[in-house]
Length: 196
Image (spheres, rainbow, N blue to C red):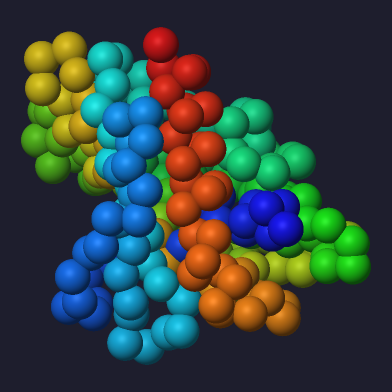
């Protein structure tokens, strides 16, 4: 059943709507994962935090490397950069493996980079499903949003990733909520390995 969590690799973000409090769901290997309920959805949002010795630009380059995204995202089987319209706008496609009888999923992700200051970068993430043709082997996930926040302090970078969305299909919300921490935890472990 853990394979079902593949859909969370990039897909469950929440911006500023819903004023509920975050609750610590998992704290392991210096990675903290929080969840909270959203007024408009049965599926919870999640937020992940980690501090790692690296540079802000190195984290940015890994997050925006669409051709390699599947290498470190949990249960991802393929990915590619579809378009880079500027140094701050990226369009990425990624495919996710789910077990039979569920259909594999795919997502089209728009990344927008915003330099808050020399040491702070925010990368907003939204669905861009209509920007790439439907792939018949996959069920397209069309509802998700969130961000990455990268904060450099000396030789350390604090990485925050917040997400919320709907994986499409018939996965029950109680199951999604009960296993929501698995994919982001694995993603952050893999991301840290690539940064060190």
